[in-house]
Image 1 (cartoon, rainbow, N blue to C red):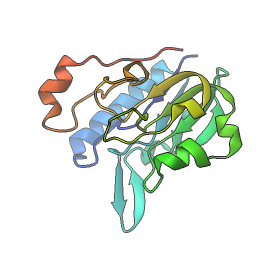
Image 2: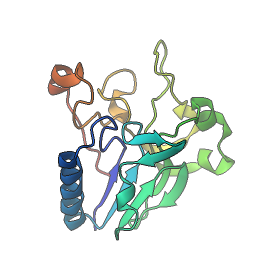
Image 3: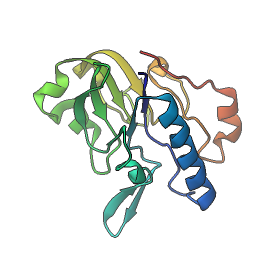
Length: 180
């Protein structure tokens, strides 16, 4: 009855050759056998803008059983009863929108806040959302590839390097999986 929630960047937009599609399909087939439900947040690396339309590399999962794709901010309850606030990466959505302009129910008490966004920190160039506005018991974020900074424990880190300069850097950094 375990559920899997992936925090975006399942693939990299610049590299989606057949081998990657095959690997991605294989990964989800294995995950389907191990998890009752799979939730996948949209990330910035798994998006492409084609003819002014955003396309996600995980869209092929939309019609598969026991999958939920999250490309827009939402609040939902998992099959196991966790109330989740989900903030996926969205083009043209600002940090201020997530921090201050969502409907009021997003800022009420919930079990877990997940997102594919940066968390606001002093002296950072990433920008980020103000998580103090959200009243959640737990946090889990993707987007930042390395688990560092003031909120390092809230990030899972990237499962693989997406840039050449991360090859050595990410080999040394720990990734994490959060279990709730």
